[in-house]
Image (cartoon, rainbow over the protein chains, first blue to last red):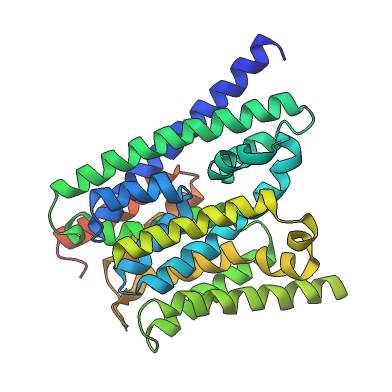
Length: 227
Length: 103
C-alpha cells in the first residue's frame, strides 16, 4: 500500500465520518425533543450505534408505542448489520475475542468502505477500521451537540422537529429505492402504515405495515423470477 | 420504561452484529432467510415514514408534517445531503406554523 493510497482511504473515512456526525446532530435533537434525556440519547449512540435503529426506537417511543414495540422495530432494522458481519468476517480475518469490538463498528458505512477495497485485504481492513472509528467518534460528538441544543429550545413543534422525524426516515430510505420492487414495497408500506395508524394502538402499525411490505416484496420477487 | 428500551434495544442490535461473525454461514445465507431480510429495511423505514407523518397518538392527523415531508422529497430529488433534507422539512413545517398557514 503506497502512502497515497493510505492517505486516500483515511480522507474518505474522515469525509464519511463528518457526514455521519452532521446527521447525528439531527438524531440528538430529535431524540431529546421526543422525550429522552441527554444521557439516554448518548447511551443509544454509544451502545446501539446504528442510525436507522436509533431513529426507530426514539420514533416509536415518541409515538407512544411502548418499549417492546420500540425494541422490536430497532432490532428488525438492525438485522442487516448481521449480514454485513457475515461478509466482513473473512475479509477482515477476525478470530476470537477481537470479533466483539469489530462487531460494534460493523454498520452500513464501514462495510461499504471495506467492500470497495475487497481485492486487497490490507486496504479493506484499513478502510473498515478508519471509517468505523471516525464515525463512532463523530457520531457520538454530533449526538451530544444535537441533544444539548434541543434541550435549550421549547416546544418541538415550533421548530418543526416533529416533521424532521419522518424526513429523517425518508432520507434513510431514499438510497435503497433502486428497483421497481423496492419502490413498490416502500409505497405499500407507507400506505399500510397510514391506514393502520387509524385503527390500531400506537406502535403496532409500524411492525404490521412493515410485515405487509416484506410479504409484498416476496410475492413480487417470486413472480419476477418465474417470468 | 425508556431505559429498558434503550438497554434492551442496544443489546439486541449488538447481538445481531455479533451473530454475523459467529453464526454458521449457511444459517444466514439460507434462501428463505435472504428473501425475507432483503426487504426488511425498506419496508420498515417506509412504514415509519407513513406512520410518523400522520400519527397523533392512535389517531391520524394531517398537519404541517405533511408539508415538511413533501419539502424533504423535493430536497432528496435535488440530491441534498441528509442534514439539509431534515432541516428543510423542519424549516417548512416551522415556517408554515409561524405564518399560521399550517396546523
